[in-house]
Length: 383
Image (cartoon, rainbow, N blue to C red; front, side):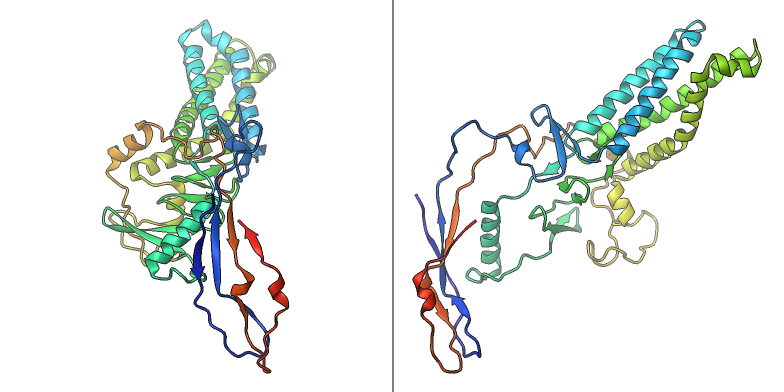
């Protein structure tokens, strides 16, 4: 059953050179939600972002997967060559050597899969009914209940540990982003505690999968050093028994492992060290690159992010100490998914904005006459 709510306008007619239609009143009619026949639709099928879902919405990843395929190929190829050429030879010296490599390999692959297919903390789009309620509350707060032209402020201020933090309005998701949340341009989603979009894992890195990402990078840095050392040791021991050219022909897989590990180890170790610093400082990559918070024991630099944090960068309101920040980010329980991709769609009520034509007036022209041609129809707009 619909319940009309009338919202009168404060506009008044005034002389003008051309006729203009001015609404005098409008009504919002809310009808009960209607469940269409057939099975219910899951939320991931109506998701507006650029993501791919699997296993009924349980797996989430980005649609851009070129670099992800390269990562998978390099890991599988390098590990296969190691366990085919190096592991059998080193097993005769000590079975622990290939066993350690196997343990690190399983750890790296499992955390890689978890990082790539876990919801990073995506915020769903705001429904129309929520937008209307938000506008109503904002109008009541600002004292403009009857003004249809009131615009949402671009920012909202919240105070966290005595520091002012800006919450920016996202025009795509139609919500005020929570602190540390940002919009990913690649996946087209607002992500809680957004760190960055990593093409090598094919997903955003955020609140719900950052722990997996750090474990993956940290263990991978150890693994590439370990594989490099094992392959060099293998070839060095063989070189004591035969010429080096014969060694390369006998174990070409070891040569490939050495080359791949040598080329990738520097960037992987650098990435692991960088994220270790971010964990100790309780920062995200996004915050560090934008320079949102000033470094401790350093003078306040000129602000380069006035649109996000006007004035000079403040101190980090989320910092609780090196050890607490490190442990809090890595060992706390995983935040529940806000996206709820496996849930079913709740059908929203239909909202009609009806503006009766008798409530329209036409501003008079120079001759002071009013037109009555538009009094034959009653326009209705469905939201």
